[in-house]
Image 1: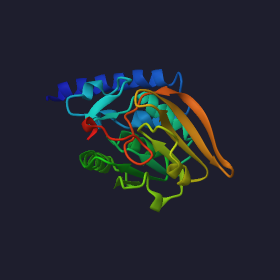
Image 2: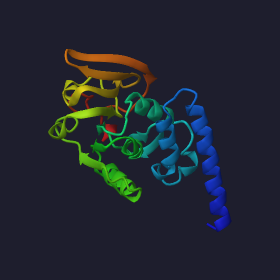
Image 3: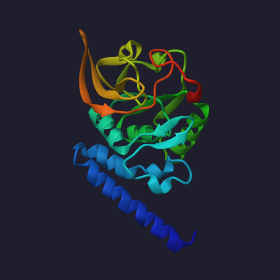
Length: 226
């Protein structure tokens, strides 16, 4: 690629990113979240060959039956956590690492778990290249989340569960927040769950569609989900 071609590519990416952020700003008012999404290059996290689609407001396949989430959903989920930079955050489902990179700029520490070794290795490499030093990516274990590292001030779940997982609620600190899609394999409701001294409070953030959370407190695996 010549310098002129590279400059044209960079200019197209810049204009596409600005159009996307202008669209997101209609619904998302958290300026820290919007500024962070402007700073993190989404094209670094998509599959080779999909860079030109990086700033479309849609999910993209990253292989292994997984996707990089739609930017609007990333913005809504992140803003709902109301991070101020002091929190320890748990992410369930590292995937491409894009959501993790957003969280790393907004929280004190991020612990992320991923079941697919190839995705975990790819995300670790990209996040390391971007200088995200406050992130730890763990292989998914038998128990959901990272109970040995709890409590967490916030949890974000990037795969759908049939119900709110009690084990993840138990990993929240008092007044901790969790954003999680809950419903069927086909469609879900995005919930903001807050742990209180007497149980949980929950609020719907709207409908969504995520890949299923597989394993304990999730869905049974289907053959094409391995």
